[in-house]
Image (cartoon, rainbow, N blue to C red; front, side, top):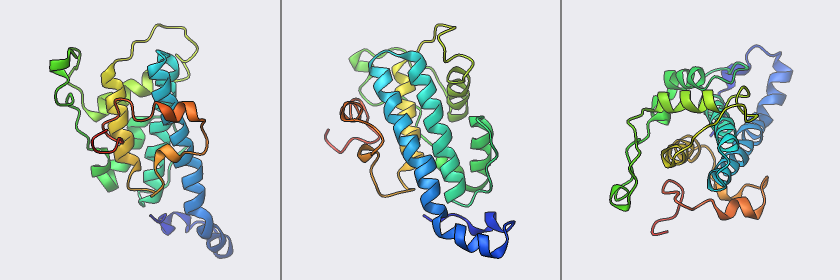
Length: 196
C-alpha cells in the first residue's frame, strides 16, 4: 500500500521527496501499529468487564484505522479530529467498501442463547463508540454497558479496515504484552484462523 503523493504537493520539492520516502512507514507506525495496541487493549478490556476502557480503546483503534485508510488509500488529508463519523464520511468518498461489514448476529449464536442483538449499521455503531468512548465519559462519571455485539462489530470493522493495509498480522503487534495477545482469538471470528 502506498500513500497518495498528491497530499504532499504543498511542500517544497526537496522536502516532499525526502518525506515521501518515509511517509508510508510513518503512517503505519503512527496509525496502524498504535491502532493495533488500542484494538488488542479493547478486546482484553471487554473480557475483563472494563466497559470504559473497552469503549475508549475501541474508539482510539477505529479512529486510527480509519485515518490510516484515508492516508494510505489516497482519500485525502486528514484533519485533526476525533469524530469517527466525519472520518468515515471522508473514507467513503474514495473507498466506501472499506466500511462495509456484516452487522448481523453470527450464525448459531441465537441457538446458544445470545438474545440481545439490536439492528445497527456501521454509522450508528461508530456514533455509539465515538460518544461513549469519548474523553467526556472515560473517567467513570457514567455507567456504561457494553454487549457482545459491540465486540463483534469492533472485530469486523477492525478487520475490514486493517487487513488489506499491511501484511503483518495484528496478533504480532510489538506494542503489547503476551497477556493481551492471549485473548485475541477468543470469540474473534473476523481474525481467527479457520476452524479455531
